[in-house]
Image (tube, rainbow, N blue to C red; front, side, top):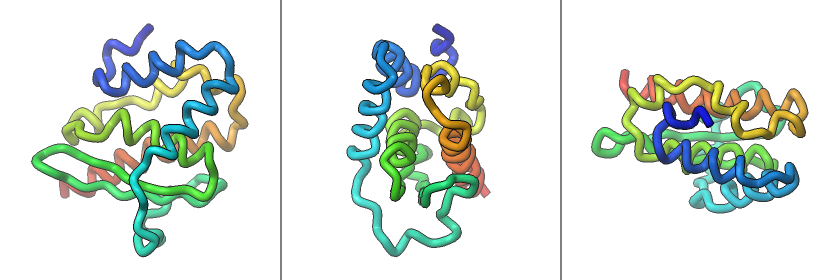
Length: 140
């Protein structure tokens, strides 16, 4: 596994998903990550927080606390919310430089691409890239 170059928090989540051989089980695990997201204030569902390029409505915020980045968000689709929850769980508490240095290549290691439609795969990447963009904005 190539997860060793990733932050331990993200590598651990990827290892967990990879251990599930059944694609349906992987989807179910993703949905659980989405359900674990804290409640998202409806007033934050504004264009500035929308993840562009997703078929479903996905909203994402980022905050900087003691030099660490924390994400929260919501989506009207279970899988998209699962992507968001998965990435937030793996990336919350990382420093901005670590987040900005990540490559989206790790998405291939999840083993979801076989069963994801191209638009869903793009959605996952778009959520990830929006997290990086929000991190850049926190630094400026």
